[in-house]
Image (cartoon, rainbow, N blue to C red; front, side):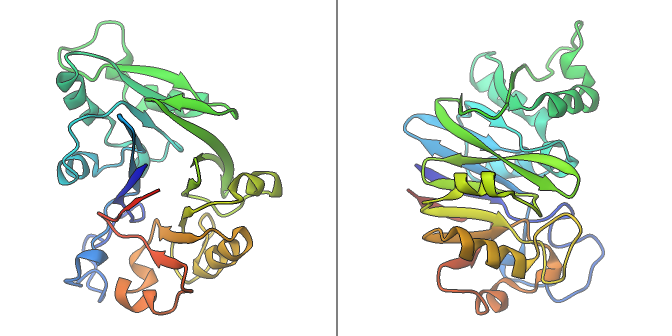
Length: 254
């Protein structure tokens, strides 16, 4: 299995519009952070988790020509805003619908935000999408099995996912003990860590490191990183040996 980090940034991305801090002005490519998303390739299957505002650019940058399914964690705009661009894959797949997996609540949000996709009398050229429901059981998206992990993003329930010995946990600041058990025995964990200061709806750096120590994956990467975390190269020096900050374009295999 191959995992590509398409985006490792928070909702505003990095650089932030109009910001002149040293992170936003950095020339290090690892300090340029698109909105959070990953690409998972296993055998002959390819899926993405979340399609944020940078989805089109991310697909071009990663040279993705085949996409079997889209899986959504939750309905916030920085995770769903790029859904319209799946129509390119409808064309590449000769009109085949894109399989989209989301909870019932997220599906309602998609139907509200992208009403034109789901109306009976569709305008020519709109994306063709088939919605599939995510509950709490293992499900198969595009030939890849995913185990949902329930986390809280302040008061909003979010679905994160385990795929084999890899887990992707974004937009969380609380995971109960039952769900933590689903994260045991991981080779790689990607976990959100917004910044060093405490935040109302995301783990900060200390909280993320404490959770990583508890779960004890072989390797952990931090994602959903804001400019307030500091420069990539400088913050990396502060981390334990098995923890790194994810960056756009990071690729690893399991």
